[in-house]
Length: 139
Image (cartoon, rainbow, N blue to C red; front, side, top):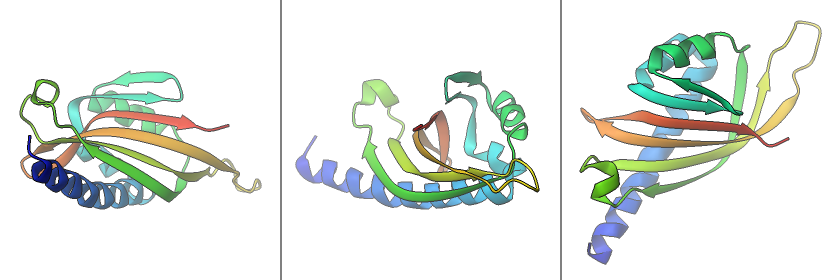
């Protein structure tokens, strides 16, 4: 692969990751019922060691979580260049870190938790879909 091709793919990955992360966390916080549209049918989730497989099961898992408020503080992204890994589908890895507050009760002030979340995204019908999601609190 030529250096200019790698540079172009890296630039595209950076733009896509920024747009994706903004949409993902806004949807998760404000319209969580719609988050399922961002996952591939056979996506996987590892949430602080809890493994969930399939978009429907991921949605059931998310439905059990309290209301959230995410603040993204930084992000890194890389295109997946090896066709043997991505099978010719345009794919990227996105790692996001920041803070999240989960509303636990009306009386208790939500406590911020530092998190890191890594997504593997693939382009399908001109939309980025999540193939893999790995969320970890940094306690």
